[in-house]
Length: 184
Image (cartoon, rainbow, N blue to C red; front, side, top):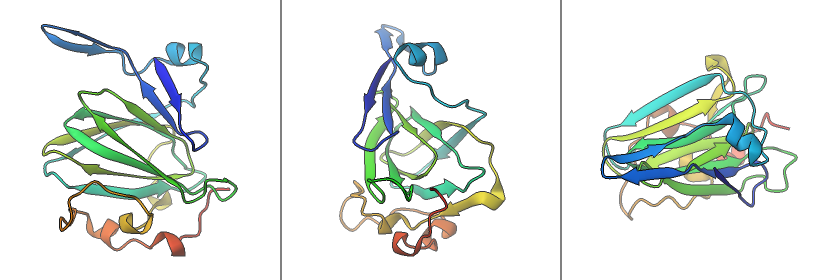
């Protein structure tokens, strides 16, 4: 597995090898041993999640789960394509408030590891897009939170004039400027 460090500490791009032939593609998407051999020690994953967005330009985010239930995530695309975004909200970080975005697709097979202390969101680029992610903590409803997707300085790839489809919770979330981060 190829691991690429981004300019934000802890945020990693992981590229599992893909084996293609006339039948399609085989890829080992998770291997603790291979990542350890590549010099990574990721936390234990305890939960797998799936979201399926039926419409292009669906936006999910920017979400977090507060300590002591903070979640790290390993995100990949099972079907379609989406623009995946992480925003650093660790108050002690030199990159606080900085965002990183990457297109994840079923075809490119890339994965993004987002440690605890980040906001996370995605924008679908095709209909019927599936996001799959491993989490380092169980879902805790009382610890969930959101920041408005359009307040984080992200250059979302939707065409001008296209309003992303969001949930009411995401549309009504607080702006980043008003957010008091629980992540030290």
